[in-house]
Length: 436
Image (cartoon, rainbow, N blue to C red; front, side, top):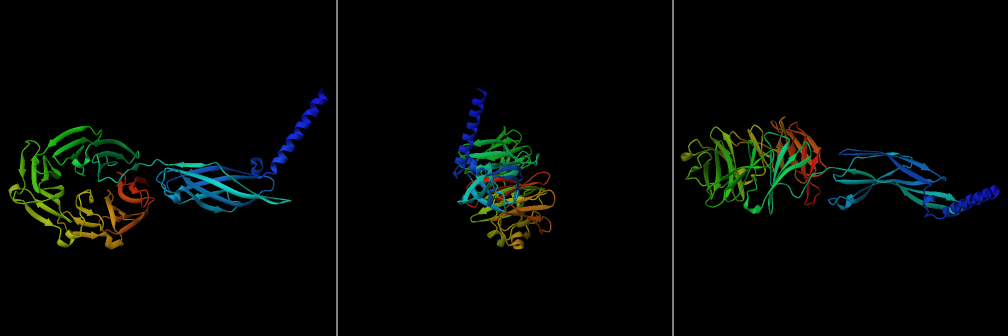
């Protein structure tokens, strides 16, 4: 019994060896292909690069003919070149690689592929093997469109309020620290609303063409107050001055007294069509007017509503080539100057004199700008993956930042860190917030 059991075990072992040898003659057999085994041993990621290491174990005198790194994406916003891409061909003895050109996408998959052959009496037999996937996932905030207007919170400089106008009007708050949209509110029938936010103290205000101005608390987006302005035609713009709301209705400039509810015309003889207004204090008011297709800026003395005085106005050349617009003007934090888009024209608040034209300095045009609190001015370069950083007094170009996305609107936190709303690719209708 013992002998027969030994004989049985011996024959089973011989039979298994026979099956293994027979199966190894097939190039499709996994046991034979496992003449090379590859394993990813380290995978380290950051915004700009991925470091990957691996180990290779060889059997049966396998000879490596090629070693390649592939990167894939299942991201719906990836273009064709990013969906599957050979990013490196390496020597067979290499065991590490750094990808320094990582696309700004949500999901990236890395695979190492090896082609190899085995020499035998009947000639070389060729096989391939690949590693398991190593996955890089990012937390990317995506937007269906660039907001029409963006304002920085006054009590928490790490928060920004975005307004997007389409079929509805959406207002939402983005926190740079958490990289998340934390609050949002929707107003139906967006075509009835102005495409601009006004921020005052701890409230942001949205206005409708019918003169209804809704205030939202910046902390929880609860509705705090509603003003009803007496509108004859339609509300085109509004701005706060202490306890007054200055507004533009049927090309007339009016002042609504918040305390009394009284409405007073400002310079009744003077007709205007301003689309942006800001209180400069000391009875001075800045209006950006629209006389299609041109915009220009004017500073008024409004100490006497019956006799307002025009103090300064942008000159004729600047007016007719300025592209000044309510959503593409950016003010220095001390309100001493502001800058307009495309040409990067910096104007003094004191007298609306032209201080600089950044496009003449760099040869580029710009989308949006943002001043920080440390003497720097950031500008997103039109149709380029670049952000230019200028000294906001000398206007010297001091830094060029390369971006992954096509940048549109820079965001600066309280401590000076940078993020940017950008186009996911050159043709995309979707956008994302890029972190640096």
